[in-house]
Image 1: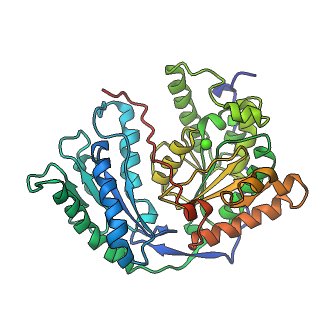
Image 2: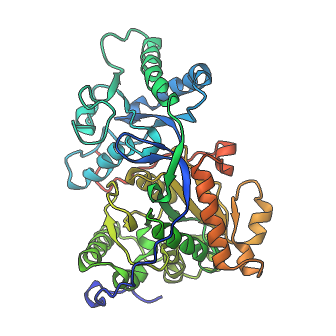
Image 3: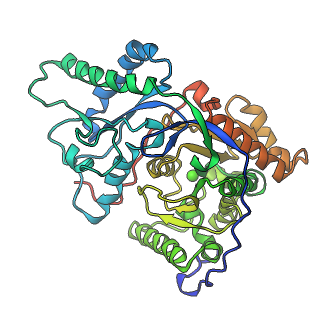
Length: 429
Ligand code: CA
């Protein structure tokens, strides 16, 4: 396996021309006050610390059983629980990553601008530190987010805490329930592309079809993120060459160099990425895996770069720097503002998120046959000659618009939800 390409010898950007505009496509979404658009209408409850997770889970179950049936336009209730908030070096430089991730998660477009927070009281990540005034768009900036603090003296007994959370949830649910889907241009989509459980077909069938759909989305003015640092690192020269400007190329190198140093600090070996399943599926090493992985980014110029946990602020093709871990990448793409997720897999994974629909694309006919009620699209038909990359790309594009408009994915139908997992490169105490 060759060493990863040095950052010193990278070619200057020679970006391809911007792709021709694509018009005439739309979807039905929920328009938010800040201009963003949701593909789902969810009540999300932010947490400042892991200590409250059990209480919130109890409250969310009650909200689902007792309140949700009264609000049929609301798709669900999600507790944004995580492992951060206390027992951490909160002023360490890298702590900015988990903190801004939790902060930006709260304003994901699928949550309608309604921000509710459950706090313990004694944690390091106080609500004012998590959500300082003006840090994220909140429906009513004057009052700030609604906070239920479990250690508040007014709470006598567990049920008092639960009642407080349910009472606050009610006003948010009423407003969310009054919303309706309206026709929105494709440019309002913020799509996160990811792969996991990859095999040798990923780079031949599913990822090229995703890349074709990425080009269609970018042509229609949407935001498309590709990520997974360790799975683009060995193709860095291809990415910097496609950077729209030198500034974008420098930002790609900055993020990947930072990640190299992070991996070196933990003495990660060069074979840390590629799993036993990847190898069994025919991927011999990370270099080969990266060549197939970056195909998800399509063929156009790369317009921007964001660091882990940052919110994406422009349209076009964006490199959102994240670890390749499925759950961490998904969590960071949600924080960036993702309202639709596309996930390719060759070995098969039942991955799903409660916060955003996940369209899963199988790389092989055999997987699509066995997992017929888990995989949404079968890109194996490219390998068997039943469809072209272009046909599959268009099929995926049309399915994305349908799912963005409310059609349920298999993971949604079964209610398969992976945990949010934060990227915390800072010390714990
Ligand atoms: Ca992944």
